[in-house]
Image (cartoon, rainbow, N blue to C red; front, side):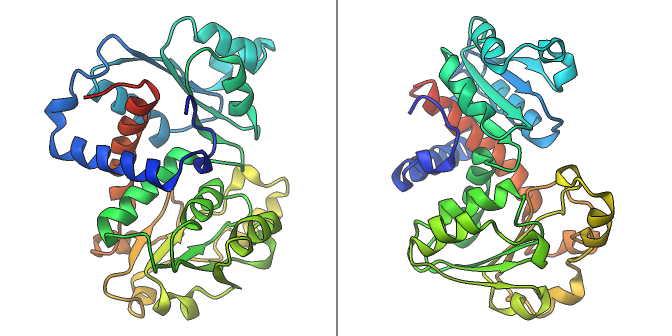
Length: 305
């Protein structure tokens, strides 16, 4: 594997290898401190990001490498009309690996075909976000000890949520997984994911509108924000943005060992009062994302430690 554009490029065995590497990094950070010395990561972020960009940068620095790049399109030659292909061909001359976020679906795939170094998709529109999924998987693995026989509830914007689409695809390959898809009618999971992923794998699922009714049966609750930037109609966003708010009252009906996840940033879909609940894992996800990005960089650069 030379690039990571879609989580499904990784087999379950490769995902486990990345998890094992991440766990070893957590246990023995000094062992990896100079593993990417004199290597450079380029972060090409054509769309704003805080956690993902800084996570990639922190990952590379902790591996002993260096980072260059830009954090918004207007800071790059894209503002002059340069194509994605030309940008990555040029950047390939400076860097050993590229992490790219772009608002247009498919842009990182185009980039990977033009680049002469590995390209990691750091999010493309409402399409994929594979490294967030790696963070999610490590979080589930560290908290639950398995991916099998889990009931996973995904709540909020399931139509535009690229993290949701990627996580459904990744979890669909494990035994006994069930999905509870919680959303308003207007933000349901796209039909192609239902047919091509969930139903194609014979996975038990249901589509519901009530978080309160669903929460008692869940092992994992994955909350998402309603994404203002994906809406054309402001009135529609305002009507839907507060559909689901997880608070301590709703958590009273949840299992004691259920975990609450969120790809962040949150707006108000999880009350800050939930932050102190031992089931809240969304800030753990942030840290786990750094470790999995470190493991992925090592894998794509074919660095052995």
